Image (cartoon, rainbow, N blue to C red; front, side, top):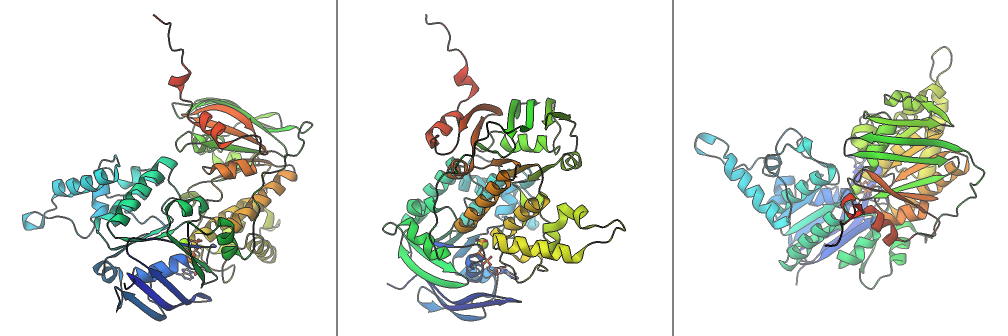
Length: 508
Ligand SMILES: Nc1ncnc2c1ncn2[C@@H]1O[C@H](COP(=O)(O)OP(=O)(O)OP(=O)(O)O)[C@@H](O)[C@H]1O
Ligand SMILES: [Mg+2]
């Protein structure tokens, strides 16, 4: 039987980057075909060519055995190909339903928008996805996770034969990932072919039939997902094998407390949170999405107001009312939402890396030390393996994972006494993840206090010296790191709701 999709000898050249070199890729109907590879390997570019976003510079594409020309997103849609992009592309000020049917809205007589039909159709899709969402909600009011679900709903609404998902689960919690997998299995049984891009290795075994690995713009190979060991797929991706042993915990018994929070409160989001971090310590924060970890980080950083609470740095009480106060006090915060807070995507890589440390490159006359900035940028580009033709490349032209590495570099260079990293490795490939873990460990070894928020339990377990767990705005416990704690123990505290802690009442 002919392949549903057959891409042969695909070439793509951007200024300064040979992004795809003679790439072959095939998709059968009813299969989930995972596309893996390091940040910048060319995964999104290949899929943008298949979905008509970019024109290819060479090669052929066949759909159902026939050679086709895909000269725009509409041509791809007409061939039954739709894509969920890595970067969310919804219109913030339109409703959820309007976003899903943009350009194809049901109309009444005289061309008036048929709101009722629009919302009804959106509701039908949500019902099939088991998603509880009011189609009239404005997109700007949704969490990143919900926005991702809307992107998925939009792709489903085309009833395509081929569905491309570019890192669909990067911002989803476990329950949402389960829902997505149910949808994927249903589509599969209906004969839809699915191309699935992800950096989460455990998802491979759970959902994929075959895996194609790309490296440096080339196809390394295609293997069956079930019978190929993860270790082998990782070495195909990064050209070496990686260890995933838990961090060795340094002896911190004599280390002074660098940072302490007492009685932090704001409404139901932050309910009396207190903890401390020693110099040289990595404190991991685990919890389900919405547990309040980001809220705590933002409150400490002065990004949101608090109702009560005290913050001490090296034993001295600090008053933080705005992020500038926090930075002045030696606190750095890498936000989970890099698009809004972390990056100036229209500026180049160098400018973004030095942005938070400009004081260090400015002399008394106010002149900037260009050579120094270039040197530091080069250092972090090589340290983190940021894939870019030069440090003058605009950040928006980098692959998703390489953009994330730029934000990480920015805060590593800033070198604060207290560093808070919120989902630092989201969208980052396994090899670079290991590098970032090493860098965080060396920051701690230099005496910094490091707080890492992560939704990936294996990451929390591997990195943390101690693990703080939150549930519904409360700190439900602090567990030891270094391989002494299991995922189950964390999950127990992460789901320890207040109702479960209340006395059950006297037996009758
Ligand atoms: N519009 C563009 N202009 C210039 N270079 C680009 C453009 N889009 C992508 N690139 C470059 O092409 C290469 C491949 O990028 P691509 O986005 O396909 O990587 P990826 O495999 O999806 O990585 P990630 O896992 O980080 O998302 C990268 O070096 C990237 O910087
Ligand atoms: Mg990508």
